[in-house]
Amino acid sequence: DAGVIQSPRHEVTEMGQEVTLRCKPISGHNSLFWYRQTMMRGLELLIYFNNNVPIDDSGMPEDRFSAKMPNASFSTLKIQPSEPRDSAVYFCASSLGGAGEKLFFGSGTQLSVL
Amino acid sequence: SQKIEQNSEALNIQEGKTATLTCNYTNYSPAYLQWYRQDPGRGPVFLLLIRENEKEKRKERLKVTFDTTLKQSLFHITASQPADSATYLCALEANAGNMLTFGGGTRLMVKP
Image (spheres, rainbow over the protein chains, first blue to last red):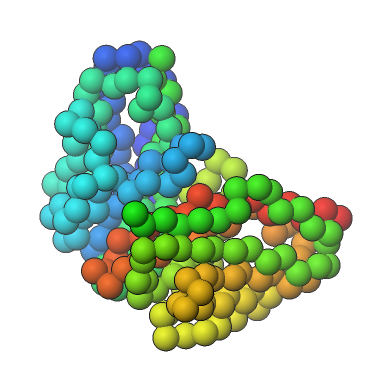
């Protein structure tokens, strides 16, 4: 298996533009997570899906952020409009689901909002 | 409020020594605690999991302890090597299940 695949690897955009980050989880995994990592705040959980259904989105910063999982093999995280403070590395991770399962992370998307 | 604390200062040790990293938490009752390794420009990679009813877990040169009374986990790397240099993150999962909250990580530097 290729692991969790994220695209793009790097994204540079201007303030106010829409940004869409993409994730393909490992086949057979039931849970998908979006995390954001910054030096100041570390790795923060944004949203968590189980069987394509959003279970907890309490970490989503504000209404500018939205996430979807239309099927078991694809998820998107959208920021509209983007702001400089959204600059961070965004990670997608997947797991088999259930308690005590380890997470498999993608390589992340480095987002820079100018 | 819930907090997971790892030493934000880098840990520098000599090759061959044992590295010990600390993870302290407050206002949590974790069912599971996991440790991950993160290299620059990469996502975290799972290393070990320990359950609340386990005191110690080992895997090759790695050892994790879990003290729910002290609310602390220790992560040990014995016979450390320069290749062990990375950031190590602890993560807690509450009984609600499958949502991991991460600490800030500790950077380990092993010098030859």
